[in-house]
Length: 52
Image (cartoon, rainbow, N blue to C red; front, side, top):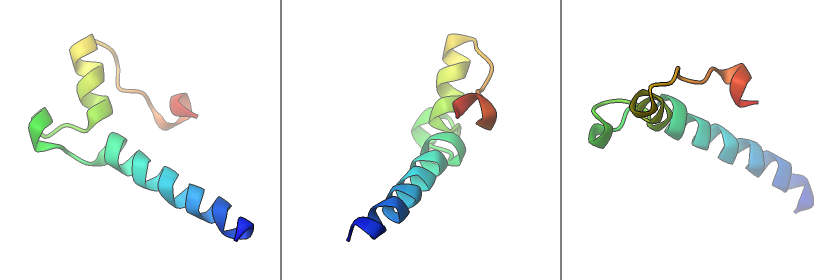
């Protein structure tokens, strides 16, 4: 089982990235959560390289 944990972590990370950075949310006016947060704070939307 330990050999499966790194693969599971990669899949979870990819899902969270998609959910928070790319997937539009109706409740947020069609924006992804990080884009919405950046807009209400008056900031630029973080890029992939800034998130790593």
